[in-house]
Length: 68
Image 1 (tube, helix red, strand yellow):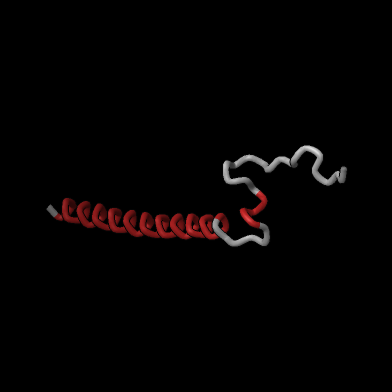
Image 2 (cartoon, one colour):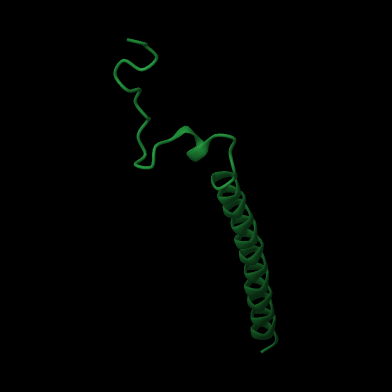
């Protein structure tokens, strides 16, 4: 009878420890994701961060920089 109580206590302790570790990991992951979003959405000196709105590299117009 006494052994069963000890097993239950150990199981409860393991569940609590697992829950605490899960919450800590989740909090750490949330902070990392928030930091990524801050970096991705940080303002830049150039409009659109020198990237076109469709995700491609902006191309130079033909003959750009040449005076005719």
